[in-house]
Image (cartoon, rainbow, N blue to C red; front, side, top):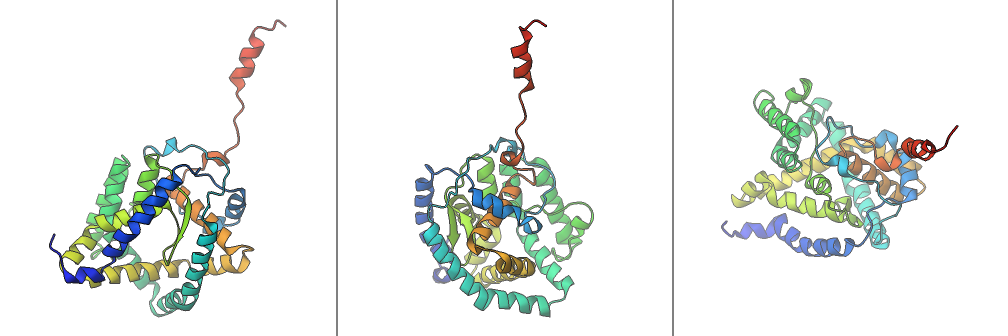
Length: 299
């Protein structure tokens, strides 16, 4: 790889710098339980309409995810709240107005086209994560979607594959690490990026380094592609959740706790591919134990 002066303006040097504190937090968080707080569980229950999207199928290894003890797992809450409110100011002043204009100016078909194209560009990462999770069926769906939508779907603008039963399934390195049994570490709120965890943040940085389009663009002095793509993903995503987030902010007693609960609910749902959380299921009585204890008792 040739060194280029334009790389100084790219996000890659920033992510190199960011990786060190993230890895330090990951090591520090190894001794922290990755449980969920009772407050978060209660808040998550009120967010059912804005919960995780239901994924088709189940990735191998997700059944190994065991119930976690009740714990807030937010030891950096003071810092997280400060960053959260900074992000909220940025959202109020810049991101939300951009999303409102984007949604008002672009017709729905155009918005769907942007969303579909951005998903299509993520296909290499989705495919890699499906394979790393051992989900060959999911990998086949990704390949099928990419082939069909890139050709018949005009470069991914039209989700022809989805209209024919091959639904999109988002897969990230964070989900892969979770399937491998790596704990999430403490809850984090990242500047601009928002709710995350140590595992999620490290996974995000890893995907930025591994993304083929990002590498190609930066190695050919086309950094504008990286910025344009990031901007379109950000504005499109913010526009998709415009009304739900407005309702959440208006009706929440503690907006920070509600967002933390929503993030965890959605992330856990994606890791389990829509399967229910084992820790929320009722306990099943051990009938065999009762039968054995009564076996030696005569009538």
